[in-house]
Length: 77
Image (cartoon, rainbow, N blue to C red; front, top):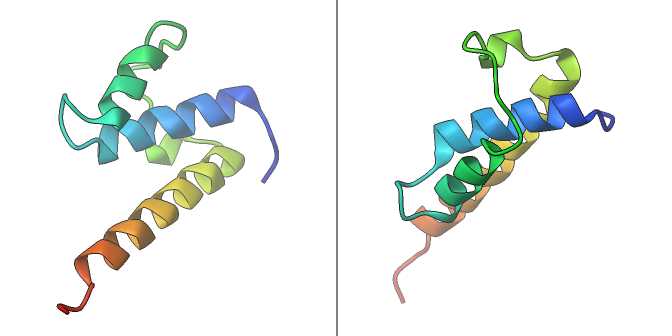
């Protein structure tokens, strides 16, 4: 994985689209802010990402799902 601002923007845009928790969420606010400077192609999808963009997206998803997994698997005291 390497830094390419277009790969980063596309990966984060898709991540925020797929994982925001509603209009009051931080991810939705970040997605809305992104549209001020990033206008994605209507054809943008995970499949259309470059290999690097897909790695960035998958790292974001993995981190999000590990956080979700930890919070849903807490044992009751």
